[in-house]
Image 1 (cartoon, rainbow, N blue to C red):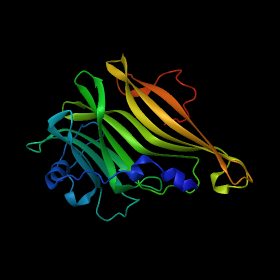
Image 2: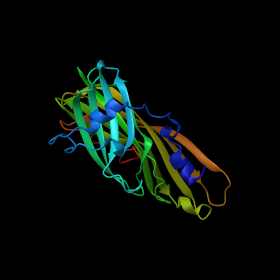
Image 3: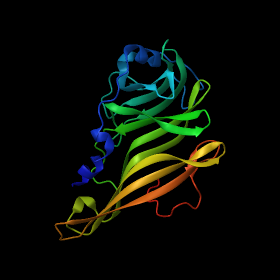
Image 4: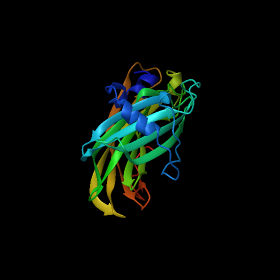
Length: 265
């Protein structure tokens, strides 16, 4: 598998099209105008600046519909250079009223670009505490990225908890990562090359700190070694585990955790 074949072999590339929001969902989220929300202030935007969208019922409460919608800052800038705003909202399923909201600015560049199907709502049972279930939003970059990177990551997961009319992020992690361990991947045959690919999963632990349950990240890591002058690669797999604890604001790695954890993100 070539370099970019490895970089793009992440679960999102095979995912189905995101669940489409209806016109009322888009209009309600676009019309939000508020200051002091967690993430950033928000002003109403035209619905025709919509870039990406996904909506779905919340399994935890049938009266709530979830929406994650990204809007461009203007209508003229080309993809790959846009200033975007991601808006995540809890909507009343009956009336369409916005119940809680989060806004995050995102700037596109060579390493990050949003496609129409780049957003996904993750409604797994992220039960952080009694009556506190986090909402997951996954953002997949469609950018090709740099030609010969040392590190590449994608599938940015944000876990949000509701606090009144705000949704507050408590965890932000990339679920896919690739890194160069040794050599130059773009100069195959000129020396030994070692690369690693990891796909991460998130699960809850029974231990509790600062009121929220610990989170466990499990990485299925594939290490590929290419020896100079050899036509075959050597591949081995392993599993790495990292425990995250809530510190009252966000989830952070446990001090003195697993030294085999290979990725900073």
